[in-house]
Image (cartoon, rainbow, N blue to C red; front, side, top):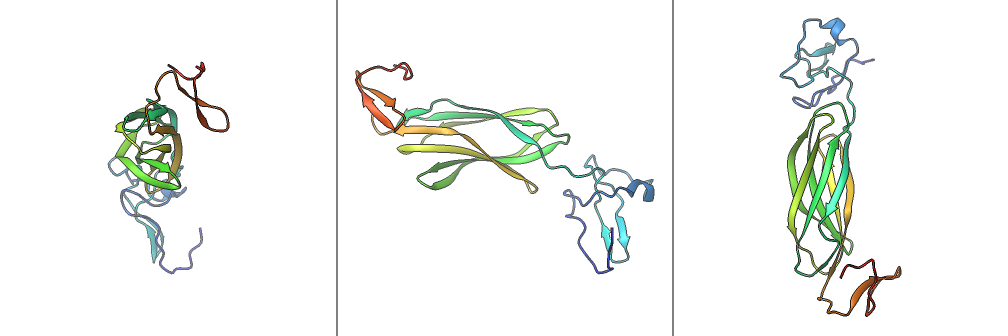
Length: 194
């Protein structure tokens, strides 16, 4: 590490912390951890003008939060019908992670936030299932995405799509997807439940 002596910022305050210094324990053998935070209680002095006030006890690793399952209660609904969404996240890293999750709906090129879970905390290897109930949308194809984020990372996951239809389809008509789009048919198709 080289410093020209001019002042620099070496940390982001508490509880975010600063940097990991491989020679820290050699230079500060009596230092202790601050309240289980992974941050040493003694600043790391670089030179007379520079110091890391909140040195990290271990090298920083990016969070490893994975979406392991997504379940929509319905994928095709009539206008006015509500749906529920469950999505399960797992901390696949080796640190306790605290983050937020915002669910977005996208339609016709516009994306709007629907719901935010604040301060979700996961220990290494643990999972959490987040549930949003009573979602209602306008007519069309709706794409649901979830953004998992905190001050250090952000990842977006597609949760699925929902078709919202404007009418109730009377029997004996069925809604079929032909590969080119949706159409009405008087013939039942096994892919569409009656």
